[in-house]
View 1 (cartoon, rainbow, N blue to C red):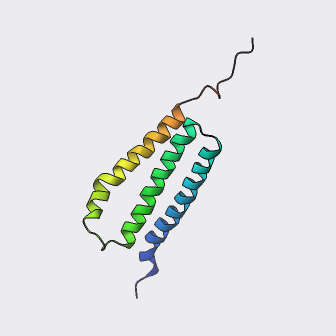
View 2: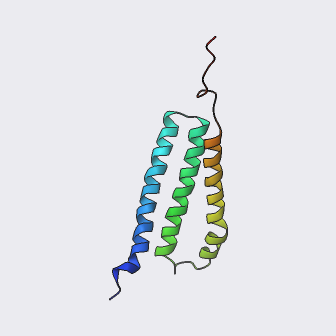
View 3: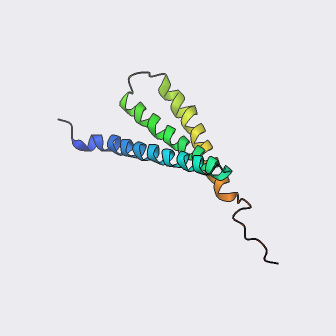
Length: 106
């Protein structure tokens, strides 16, 4: 009998993937309500995080399905999506639209 601790990592990854799907859905909903560049950048970042989480869970669950896909995902796909996610977060945080700046009261 395999101890339960071996499945703990997979369970945590599945929970994280579930939350990232919810987060991506909420961010896309916010983008639909207010189509601004900042929401677009945040949606791109959250969707990238969702794709990374869901694909890593699927690789964990179906590791024997296609062994050629695993090196491609680990070497190219995941780092590219992580870079896209980080750049989207950085631009969304640093970029300040004119609508938030206080106006002069002259």
